[in-house]
Image (tube, rainbow, N blue to C red; front, top):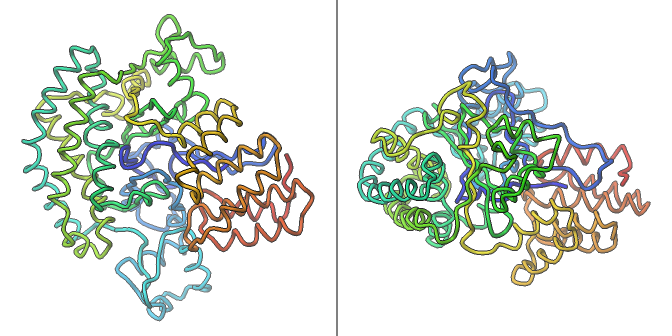
Length: 513
């Protein structure tokens, strides 16, 4: 299946450094069939290749500072094929149109097949065309504009921090009382500075597009990279969420990228049951996730937690103050992007400045695993925490049940979600995949077909995969010509997490279950 991260929406803004040649976290799995070929796995960055110590490839298309400055906020990081920028030709074209360029101007580059390069960058969602001008499909914050942006954010941080400070101090006392002080750094980020409460507030105010946050998210490049770049990856059961905070030093550890392992960590933190998965037991002990009795050592806060209440109330105030600071059109005009795209980068960067101030005031301690390169992996446990969701989310529950191989339960949750959202492409995709696992192919075709019938722009992040999976089912039903037509059609939509690679593969190879 194609899978997006379940949780890092605005509330869990996934902000990360992208080392040269590394495309990010492998949140999308291709698991509709245990026997089908899957896209190449994206490997975690090894310690000797961590940000700051990575030797870029000689044919890197864009300078290393661009890859280090990639940041993201939302739910579907793989909506952008950023690896396209590492291609020497495509990187050259991107740099040429960074400030906007006509096709006539780009022809001066002498690219042998400029049309194909522009098409590749467009389907990779790296560039967009407005009128006769090509430009990046996201903000690139650098140079004089970047300096002005930084000044604006730092001034906002100085204005807002005194109002948030009482909440941080109260949270510190509550964390000590609830015996979770080592996790306060992670909680301050994931439940106050970057929370679901903030997501709802900003979405309701129109500063961010709530649908875009869920369907694709926001991506930008900030050069130089922010010195306190961090992110939180989330895995939700629909009622509780496992939060995993990380930084460029700690990178995203493969141990918590595996969905069955995430589920076991979440369930173990809630149920205090012994770990029963022998293949991962030693790794979990090494990371500090399991204690001496093989129980999950990750704390699970409850709904009545005073600490959570303080953090979430503080988050509401924080979001309102950010709106006041960045709510005008001026920031977007200075960056030459839409208001919401400019606000996204400013809001995230403001959070970094707030965290830096809290660290300077010694109100929180950054765990070694998050603060130092080559830190002992045993510190990973301090980057993990479980909190209750404020409302039940059926679509998150559907993903969780899918991971438990409860495909019928997954379909029921999707149906519950579809009642008020009948034309949601992700929900229809999830339903079709679950029916594929149950080998109910007519029902899968119906779900995929309804998704395909929805109006979709060429850059739509779900349409290509709906076509690919519809083609897979047609192959299973021995309708090869129809399947090939679907794969061909998928190539005309955005290349999301290898959708073009899969379509091309199955154009030449019959999909098998």
